[in-house]
Length: 285
Image 1 (cartoon, rainbow, N blue to C red):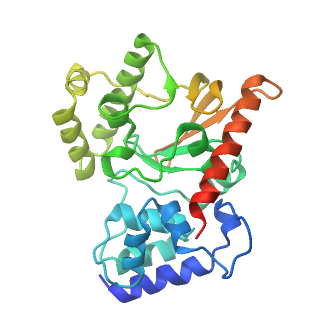
Image 2: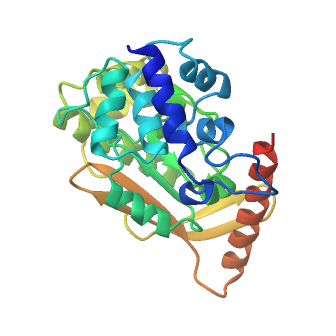
């Protein structure tokens, strides 16, 4: 890894970004242009200390996942993204591995949904990015690391989500997640991270072992599915949850909306306001 050059380029690209263009809420006056270090760390899902060490050349060999996250958060074009991977000592990921790439065209779509709860997942149902309204609705995702970002793990092993399911609905939901993961495993047999994920899930979850052993496959995405969210501040919110699949990159975009003029729409708006206020307070220096 070209340690100093990697850090220098990250700092240079960070300085050119206006917070408003990447969905970072701004409160009060700012002494410097561009993104603050803590803001880029928040967007990329890494600690401020780690980003500091990367920028100062004191930490080497960032993972492919960290480099991809930084490239996405910095809104790098294809040539700049390739350069960042080379400076980190990695080849740009090819088509034979699960993609975490958000293309400029998809990013423009996400920007237009900046006030709507949106989360983007890769083909293993690992969270790539969630916007501020999503975190306000479903709980902060920025502290999630490694397997914690995977929806299969969160629902079969981890703490679950704020979505309310009956036992039958939960069983169907879990089976759909595992069935979709099996499809991805067949599409990307060379992806070692996917194999590691399956091995880790198998070691931690007897439920996963049973579902994986059943051999069932199928898409988890269920367009038009309605979900009820148990929000700690505003109570139950019933929303439409639509999942769009970007076939070229094999990513899933999950969007939560409420019918205008309804009580659910009012509760969703309140949840977003409260959550955004907390996030702004957390980003203050």
